[in-house]
Length: 270
Length: 354
Image (cartoon, rainbow over the protein chains, first blue to last red):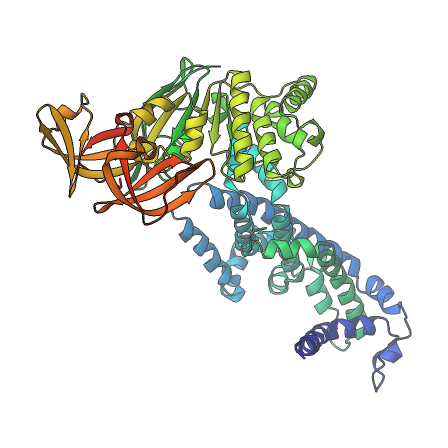
């Protein structure tokens, strides 16, 4: 009985979460006629026309490139900084460590809307609107607290004796970090990297605010702007959304085990 | 190789003073044990000597040079940790090669050194394995291997046997003694286990509450404990402590405690204590069954095979005694004991549980 309840609950949750995904994947494979058919067609004929038109007419690959650049750079920068900060916060004797960690957490709680004005002003003053760095900088700022928390938690789990052993064997701080600690912290680093990448990949509000020129817009903004004054190209939007989602699904599926290990790092000793 | 000299080492964590100015020397090639209960500051002292923590005051010399301000890497030491601290991502070979690699030794030399150490420790067939695939004893061997490949000035051991089971611990203890005999290196070994201290050490330093209680050979600390702490810490079962007074009558000395009174041998020290309150310490083996001044009822008998430990109620005190395995008496029976002067010690009255 317990098993059946568990199964039904799980199945319901999985079904509800996958339903929108299934719906737009299915829509993306329809033909123009099938999209507007009533009653809706669940299993489409399997046309790739919308994919072709989203790439040819709506410049999808260009948005994809922008997203890769922005999300990729954000991930790289945030993880690099979070590694150094996380190591320092986890291991060195730092005054006010609790306050720093709490402060980081508090900063990450600010609603985006409350900082959008100042961010826009700063970027405008620097002439960074409609540049990659103009979007990467706020993304790094916004994702850094999460990265530092995950990575610091992971470092704290590693036995301190390993670092002592490394120091006695002749390593300095940086050698200890890169030769001994980092290889062991890979699951934590991966978890942080993927969560940050997903955030930067999906982020809409800042991207819309900062990137007003089509040449720099990322996927979420690009797709939202597929819509013209009189047209709503459902098929192309569905195809573009599928393409935007697949890399994330792929990443998470590939590193699923590591992410789970990374997220549970604080809970049980690995 | 070189000796080690510590001068007036002081260390506090926050407002708690962990080391209150300790000084000692370890001679070149000596196996020295730093022993004390947990929290006595022994591990702190070891970490200061290794350079992992910085002292608040005092000086550390290795050989002729002062190393107080140097980083661990500049001190030319090796350390073996309680939980082995092997690098999990590296094979046994890589673990042992790591200190040499960090020192930029040529590859052929690394290879030769690691092979030699592996042969010495009989772990050659494990070289390709990862630490995860090894047993506790094997891991500790690898950790020792990593320490000996670099031929350091000084070996530091931080409770290296505490994580092993009792049988393995005994075996490794003998191996460690053999290792020291073969290498002839200077070794400083921290433990809370008095058996390890007694069996391994050429010199024992007893530490308690951040202060050195006694420095001496195993025989010194056992036969001539400097104070109540040392007397109670060294030896198992623990020494019996009796509080009483020394009364001198006609050139003889008597120890009196409650309704207990017996003659004690004239010792040089006893004159000082005449008529004063003392704590008397009696080793469990210093009480010999049969025809003596001490009488009591047997409360409990522990038959360990090779010997028997009995608990005797004498007056309002319980005395622990080590007697031969074939000791015939049972719980509830009366027994009389004589006292061997060699195992009796006197201390100014203090807290016997100290």
